[in-house]
Structures are given as C-alpha cells and as structure tokens.
Length: 64
Image (cartoon, rainbow, N blue to C red; front, side):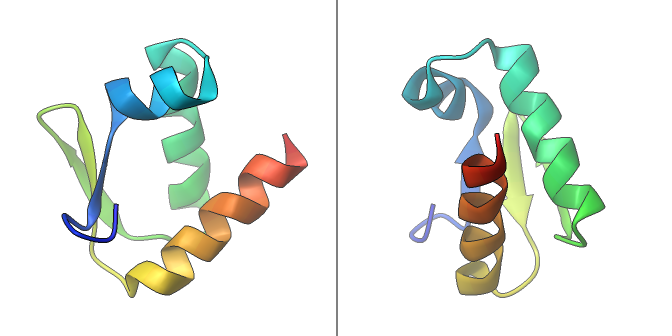
C-alpha cells in the first residue's frame, strides 16, 4: 500500500478473507470517511496522505 499508494481490491479481499464485492464496499466506506482516491483497474489509488489513509483503514477494519 505504501509503495504504490494503492490497494488492489482482489489482494485486499484475499488478505481479509472476504469477497471482492465486500472489499470494494470497504473501499467505499473509506471514501465516506473523506479518503480521496479513485478506483482504476481494480485498485483503489490514494490521493491524500497515505499514513492518514492507512490509519483510517485500520480504524474501519477494527470497527468491522
């Protein structure tokens, strides 16, 4: 994530042991948390500060 400033949805789903659809829904929840980015070629690409984005992602996963 840090190196490419993105999350491949398929790998994200695999790591979390969830469907690609559920992983994509988590990405949309990140966007609702004011994380800016775009989905291109099945990857969510961050626009904001990646440390802040990763922190928000971890918080969201803790809530799940």
